[in-house]
Length: 124
Image 1 (tube, rainbow, N blue to C red):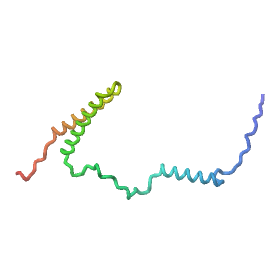
Image 2 (image 1 turned 180 degrees about the horizontal axis):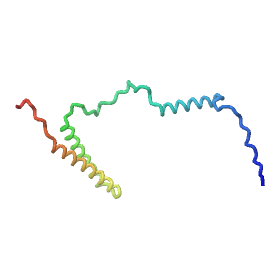
Image 3 (image 1 turned 120 degrees about the horizontal axis):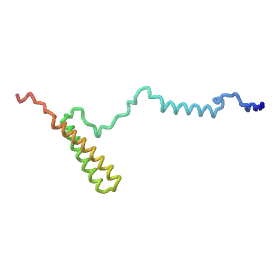
């Protein structure tokens, strides 16, 4: 049996960009896409990063490692203190974090143990 299908409804063949509102919407969409997807042509020269917590490039490795070791030891103590005040399962999570900190501290300590202080030529 042949069943005739109705013709689809007639649509206007006008472009969606012909009306003023749709043109504005299209332009706004293009600006938004350009803002998020196209990188700027040149980096912003006026932005200056904060130097409040900057590690100076001339710091020696031994001092940096010693500071890292002390920071890790402090973080380990803080995590241990927090673990005493929380119940499971958060306690297990905090103790796991403390263990990761302690492992990092051990690695930094090993580097400090292996670190050879350069001999100065002034004492020769």
